[in-house]
Amino acid sequence: MAEPRPAARTDARANRARILEVAAEALAQDGDASLNSIAGRAGVGAGTLYRHFPNREAVVLAVYRAEVQRLVDRVPDLLRHEPPLAALRTWFALLAGYIRLKRGLGEALTAANHDAATADTYGPVIEAITALLRAGQTDGSMRIGLDPDDVLLLMGAVWRVPAGEAGREQSDRLLDLVVESIRAQPSDVTT
Image (cartoon, rainbow, N blue to C red; front, side, top):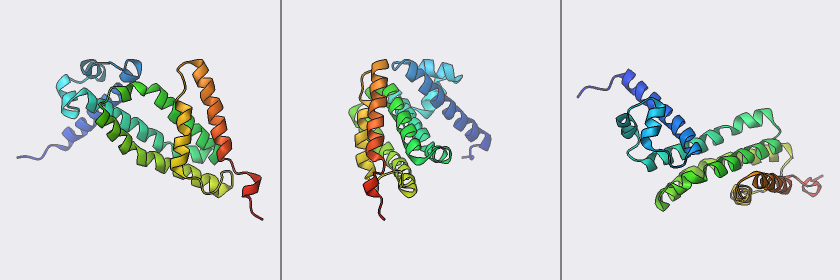
């Protein structure tokens, strides 16, 4: 059997990336978007979509993982442009917004796949939080000894607010409370 041509692999990667990009947009607009509508919007045939994703749940899982990875990948850039405490707040606001927007994605998964997606993304999210905490502890803006798992659990309140403007306002208030609880206190400074 002949090896696939490099151009074919490049096209396949490009198609997959385009499908994921379009699927993320389509599912954000309508959690019930069909695979055929996603294929059409991506400019590929249904067969191409099904070669990459055998069913709707596979698309939803791939979108979820890609979106979380995109958020995780933003941490170094945020730390280059903002002080660590501000970068942490910005990143958690982005994460909370993503989770609130994508709740429908989780509902579209079976319990087993929802658990698998959570398990797959948990490690990278914890690594991102760890990087943010280390930066803040290094510059003295964040408390020493914070556990990334605890911080993530605490942040869960930020995205468990009702939909709408009142929920967004409550989310901002909760985020302020969390950031203040992470901020280094005068008693944390040793002389």
